[in-house]
Structures are given as C-alpha cells and as structure tokens.
Image (cartoon, rainbow, N blue to C red; front, side, top):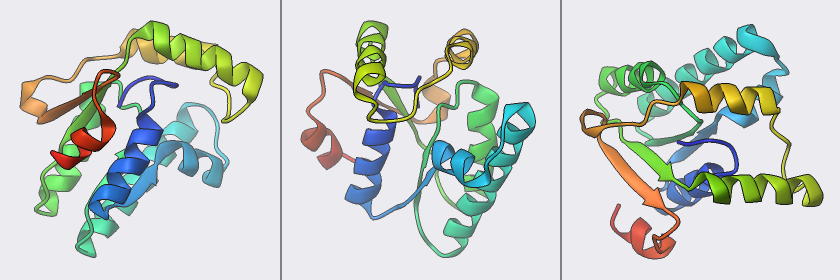
Length: 153
C-alpha cells in the first residue's frame, strides 16, 4: 500500500508468488470493469471484496494490491478477512516521495505502465493516512533487500 510508482504492484506480485497467494489488483479490476469516477471506484472495491471473500472460501490467502489511502478502506478489508477466519496484514511500502516522483517521470518517457492522473495522485496524497500498529503493519522500504524481506514473511 502506498502511492503510485512506489513499487507496491511489483511487491504485491512478489509476495503473492512467494506465498502462493491469489493476487487481486485494483488497477486490473478497474481496466476489466471499464469504470470511471467515484461510482467506478466503489464498484471496483465491491468486486475486489467479493473476489477476496471467494478466495478465502476456497482456502486461498490473498494479496490485495491497492493504494488503500484511508484507514477505513483498510478496515473494510480487515472485516472481510475476519469474517473468513483470516488475519489481515497491511504491507506499507515506505518509499520516499522523491523516488516515487522520479519513477513517475521515467514512466512518462518509457511508458512501462499506465499513467496516473495528477489530480487523482494529489487526492490520494492528501487523503493518505499512514497505517499504525493496530493494523498489523509490515513495512517494506527502499533500504530492504527484497529476497531477505520475503524470507521473513
């Protein structure tokens, strides 16, 4: 969880691969459902929660790749996990804004992934609530060695 270009999707894929978990990604659902605006955002979150619940019903752990800027969004997902006897963990990608901004600029040139609307990026940054201890937080930072970090999961 963190802002665009922080590395959360790459990390989510690595975690899912390492743990054998189902990967559910907000961006992928957004494109799949072809929605826009706040209505689309709510629909995508609803579908994501349904798919997460379905994975739990099939005894599969889930890695959910999303920004989840607000504590209440993370709490909704925690409730889904609790309802299915699972433990929710927040992976906080603690990436300096300077690195994130550099990656965004690089993407404008290289086009390795879709661009992020600056208005939406600013909105996410303004609404961001850093996760705290009651949320079962695991931190990943640019200083971590990915393989060593994964080995501790």
